[in-house]
Image 1 (cartoon, rainbow, N blue to C red):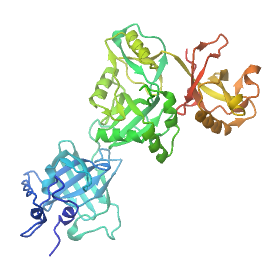
Image 2 (tube, rainbow, N blue to C red; image 1 turned 90 degrees about the horizontal axis):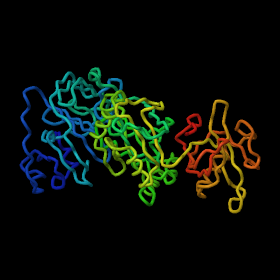
Image 3 (cartoon, rainbow, N blue to C red; image 1 turned 135 degrees about the vertical axis):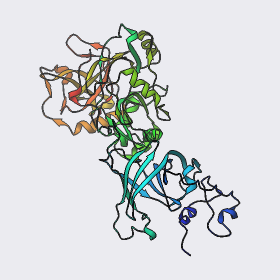
Image 4 (cartoon, rainbow, N blue to C red; image 1 turned 60 degrees about the vertical axis):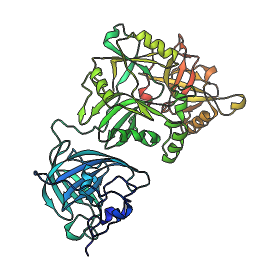
Length: 509
């Protein structure tokens, strides 16, 4: 007796344990009846406009989309990790899986953990298709669905040996799926890189009605690129830092098939539940996946999304702040490690700044509600107003410490780039933990040089016994004010800014 097309499907499922349809095997007695489970509903009649296709979003161990085509009484199936492509320039992997029963075309629900394919199944799209070609190595179809329309071809990537099955059915190997039609009208692929718009330091606007206010978060800026349920995280200096924040991958799964570029801040909380750049320090230097996973359990981060620059094939940077904010809110980003912080409109900026002071936050950012997004540039339409003063600085050397710091780093010598070179602005000797000092010693030890990198005459008392380094490391300090000779008064070290380059450092007013 020839094997039934659904033998493999049945062998992977226990009818009494899963809500999935499990039709009885051919014959007078079936395993399903023996289990005491109810008979599966009969398959629907074939619609008059052709065989059906179905796409199901499957939140299993790894998010994917199941693409199924009706053929000879079953649903021939592929698992597509990133979903069907809309851009003909990019093919997607499609893994051939077992044939499914026709009843599966209506299935939605929760497959219990521990069962094959455990997780949530959502009916994402369905419709009918025209078959242009069907062989054991190539399937060409035209899809007519509610969400997906177009001409697609699936093709096997394996050699002929072992890639075929009886009856001309597709072999069980890796395939690719390619869109043959042009991309949908007005649809644009996700850009590889969009640089963040930068703030200007200043005072609160006098026209509250024309501005929105957001709290300023004590973290690091990051752009999140989300496509096919996957997340790519890019720092302000264009570095891919995805590996450092494994807990943010779930945001991609939460968005499912949606495509987006988000602008926001990665923060870590202190013991009082406030964002702390110092706490975040241990997370932003990590490039090993195993270590990042351990740190994520001990010191988790949260992504605060405050803008959206591309959504579902459409760039949004030319929209106003109010329009972009409406789109961002519609995404309902509210998860264990991500959310959208509130934006305040129709209120006095002074009240929001006072609330930031009360909560111990860094300050507020005022954003002009009618303004578009200007990538990679400082904009007059985005103004940061701080409760306390901070300054990015370039490390140009260090002086030895005394007492328990004897022989090690006692203070860092700091500069700010200008038209003529690196200008000296003072030294900082407080705000260091032992762990931070060890990390700085290792980094600066690799950057030693014989001469100071600063221009002009340096104060002898401050640089006595100095060790000079190549000025490549950027840090951030907190201070009270600028002195008359352009030095920092009462600076305290806050941490390295590995997300920034020396050329990006400017003096704050």
